[in-house]
Length: 199
Image (tube, rainbow, N blue to C red; front, top):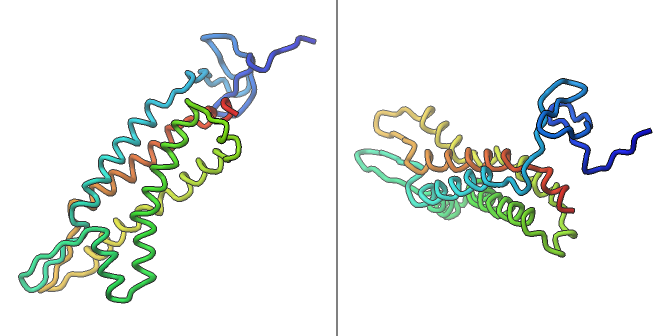
């Protein structure tokens, strides 16, 4: 019986079969897919997507998300301005949902991804107490919920067709959608095996 060291084993990303690492020409014994051992700390793509998402998030909060044109008056409101307005109108549940989905969740995702990307390259002693796999899974699960604000704007713009009232999506809606899209790409591009390698 031949003994194989753990570092000589490589996992197939398609079918999860364990194979012996044969160098540059690794082919899965089960499904025949080409297998490539990831470069250590290959986080560049995830960083690029995350930085793009953060840059897009800035105009998403500075420019109007919703532009209302009523009786000749044109008024725009930012995400935070909309939350404050809803709170003042005593629509507390809606204000809380929009605040969580449009401000809290995106910022939380940025911070979690930044932490994961830094911790896989520079592992600290305290990191052992934190379950990074659960953090990563959380970013995957909550990702689509960030789009609530964009969906609300799209629904309002589609439903309200009055002669004197018009609702349009502002510049922030596009910037916010781009930010959410690139955050999802950043989470998807993150190599989860790097967490295992730094246990």
